[in-house]
Length: 125
Image 1 (cartoon, rainbow, N blue to C red):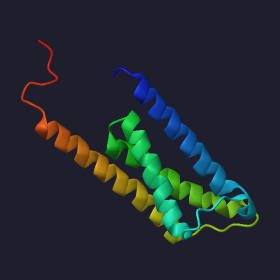
Image 2 (cartoon, helix red, strand yellow; image 1 turned 90 degrees about the vertical axis):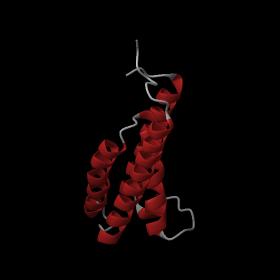
Image 3 (cartoon, rainbow, N blue to C red; image 1 turned 60 degrees about the vertical axis):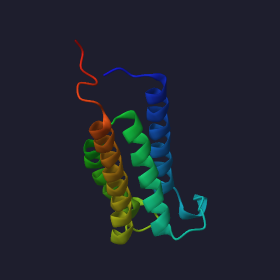
């Protein structure tokens, strides 16, 4: 697999977004930047965006989801180690739903692109 410049930028953006999510998950509650939405929606959108960006860099959506769902649940569980936060099962489920939704849409997009490709496209002689 070759990495073009777009793939590298997508991988960098995914790594930065993951770092931002980890930081936002583990910092004190009063240091967090909120969008003004319900926190469940924010979790869903953050993990949806993360999964979509990573799928641009690594077009294996189910593998990405298999890595990010446990990551999302673990990060939520780690909030129990912070002094002013508590882990929340619905929040972990919304994060996992964001990952699953983005992965399913990316998988559908890859399937549609493959279905529209002419027979023999991508094969080397």
